[in-house]
Length: 386
Image (cartoon, rainbow, N blue to C red; front, side, top):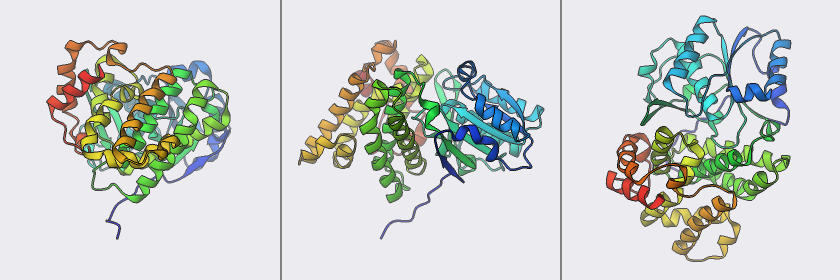
């Protein structure tokens, strides 16, 4: 018999090319004032122009907040919340990468409920009712559009998260056309990020690891493994883009319910201290965390190895298949043109002890790891990745 578990997901999922140009149809008539949260790069590209037109044709007043940066800061989040209150916003749309979606989630929560942000950090600490919320991803990586988690950088060496089903959106809108213009480096890093989500969700020792999450994680790896190189090398291939966006969403739904672990915990200090994009930060420590975990979880990783790399199904021994899985992940990064060492992104060997100390603050993640991680272990992993 399956152990009891909870499974959270958005109110509605809309998957269609061009769906973002029909956003005005997704909001209740009673909604009048919308805060549209995005980043300046998308403003310059005009990527959301058709979405705005649809909203305005539906009679909505739209206030644009496009100050979101990668690994968004507490200052940015507070500015968005203040604007929502000032403009008497009654709905929020997040449009962009995971950073914009995370800011949108917490803005909708705090502006809607009136509770203090300081009381929301952690797991299931948020209490209030949020504003109506729509999330539209423009990258295939974070899966933030279907996760009850938002991550904010609160200091140079610390990120904090809010984890609560209250911040799942009313609608998640997946429009693969929005991802066609992504540069190869972003496509690669966000795609590996999505693969990390699937791998960690499948192997998580969180009590809520469940058969639905495991099923979604495996399908995500099949889609991502088969399409990531195509999407990077042939950026206009809409079929590959659809597969990546869908795979990212499935991986997001998997880890939303079976949480991620040490790869993310060790990636966060890289992003905070060196402003390395989140997906790349995950990629740089991925193989080394999996190698460390293999002492406890080689059999688990061997179960999913052939989902990402079908040729590995021919290897009968689980330990050997796990080892090849890790090797193949590194080879994939090289194929995609990604850096593979911490020193390649400006990390010095002298930085590693402080990073290990910072990683230990991520207790909500480390508790889900298949093998216990001490500060000394974290330092050893960083040294192997350096």
